Length: 167
Image (cartoon, rainbow, N blue to C red):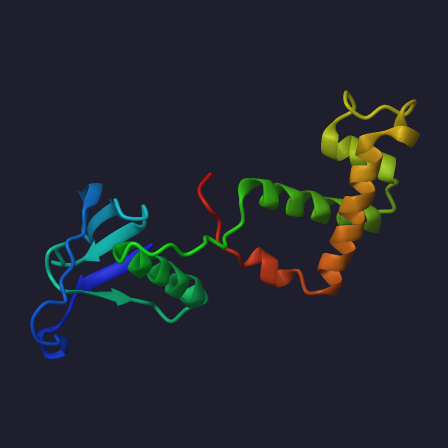
């Protein structure tokens, strides 16, 4: 979400500075107007009396999310200028794979076999003991454990801070 306020008069740089922000819907509350920009679909909060046709400034609270908020503002500014910035946030499939890797590592720490881990991840209906030796689930479980160990060695905590894409 990008928090916007009206630019204070002392900070305005001459003429202009206002962009026409086409907004999709929106609702008012005690904070201001919450809407989505039609350019890039960025979620916006126009705080206090800020209006889309006025010169606006972005507000970044200096907290743990400041870096992510700065990236959101950059994506928003690029969308206003019709420039494309690749979305580096994790997809649903990437989040699911990371979750599976961490669950595999948890199972490994609990001394569970790869078969037991695969059964927990994919279900008893899909993972059979009779076909385990040649099962795609066996190979997938091995890859998840291997990649999970690599992720831990390289500092997985940074991955967990990645913003989530709505999907």
